[in-house]
Length: 168
Length: 168
Image (cartoon, rainbow over all chains, first blue to last red; front, side, top):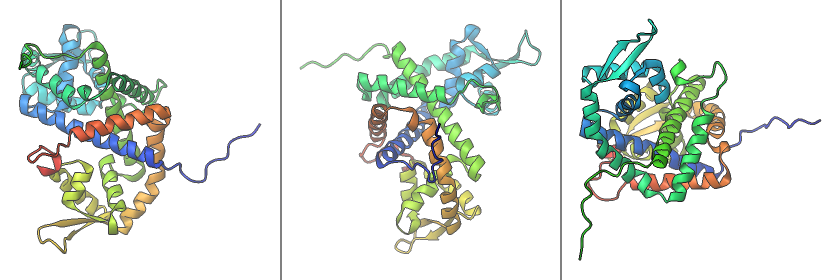
């Protein structure tokens, strides 16, 4: 039985890989900036807050445990707390103690929050289409979905002690 | 000559588009968090600072005008100023007045900055490979590069007055 030698040098990116990685960094940075601007202009909130309102709007009774919301948004609990505090000041979210768990807290979408989401969604969907989806062929869209699912799954290992944002 | 009617309702995402967009948001959020953690742990800096050091290391004389650096990093000038001030305090970057332009300023990579980059690069490349590139088939890598170039180009229109981060 032989074992592979430990490589002496790092496996640097090839020119092609380098170009792909640069394009990834450029596109994701620009798209996040673009959607943040669009949402700040049209609804006075950054992209991440909008995503939280969407998640709450899709949950039963339009509410979710804070820990669950952090997991679904893929962010840390401290980042979520900060965002929810701001959304509460805007009147779009309300925090409630969880009836079944004294230590748990629920984030609830208010009627005002639902209203701002309903008003903002058409413009936001149009921005996502215009900047991303409508620029791709059906084949490219399909491959993009496959790639992003592979990456997202790889970064959420099931084992205990995994360094996941919402567990910090 | 006929014109298309103005659509009465927004073109909502189909279920498939919705899944692709969710996967994109999850993967990009998790990957940014992952690389930030890796670089904070190994070099005490966030991903965006590392990217600035890389850009400077590849420039002639390891220096670049601030406006050019913001453009290449795809970020706003105020975000760049903040980052460069922090990098200066770490001793990794030095600001210099531009010899050919009184109002211009150059960001220069210091020897310490080059050293930290050299020490950090192998671990960072390994993280990018492990989380993204090595998980994809050659065909998926190729398509990812194509998609990201389409998106990045679409978000950097050539016309005057375009709302680009580094022009704000």
